[in-house]
Image 1 (spheres, rainbow, N blue to C red):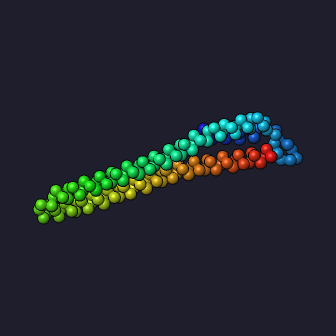
Image 2 (cartoon, rainbow, N blue to C red):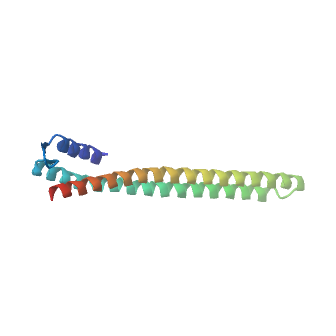
Image 3 (cartoon, helix red, strand yellow):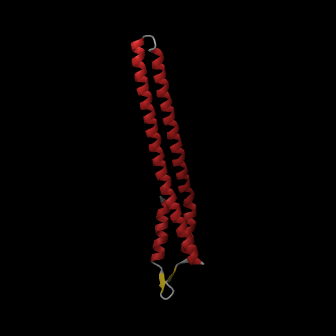
Length: 145
């Protein structure tokens, strides 16, 4: 993400700044810091858009998985209806249908869990980045005050 590179630039600027011995503070170029903050503000919406995209993609994947599961269940039900004519065939069909439904439900559940975990991890990373960015900005503002 571009925001991380910008934050590293800000970090480098602060680390390379002139230290004021007794105060434990440092002198930084105000214009340079303000320019970096402006750049952060410009890039931050892109990162938020990316997080929104991840959330929407997660929702799309969940819906797709649910549709696939529904299709598999409907297929199983159609197979059952076609095999109802004979008792032995019907008995085997019920067994197969139950197995297919159970597998479809398990697959759908696994897909849902996987996509939720993936989306959650991406959103968690974005949240951490945003939290770190806000902490840096707050710290910088405090130093500017």
